[in-house]
Length: 176
Image (cartoon, rainbow, N blue to C red):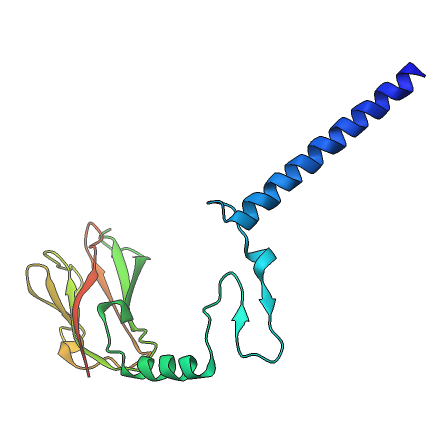
């Protein structure tokens, strides 16, 4: 009898501790304690309403949605709309490493972007690059597409050969 009641007491104690832990977690979630996600509890959808409530949703009604859509059309292009990717390719026959660069107009509002200037250090290449595609104007200033517009969604690419890879980043652009 004594052994059975000891097992029952342990079971009750473990169950009580588990319930206590669950209660503390719920309290932390409901009180907004930092580091605890509460989105799965507060997500709801009000029937007949245009508002969706959830952890990662911006609250919009129809008027706000139209205002946001119109403001996106007015958005001007930025340096962030030009994406530069580069990676290694097969080396030249004399062993100099080569790199392929892709410059893409990723403007999400459909803008064409011109006068794209890239920070490029003392960029040089052992492999000839068409200067209408990419050329160094001065230290840390290279020009893309001879300054002409890069149409939305288009990508220019070229290869250069050098003993090291250049860090290339967009310094300035102009909206066309």
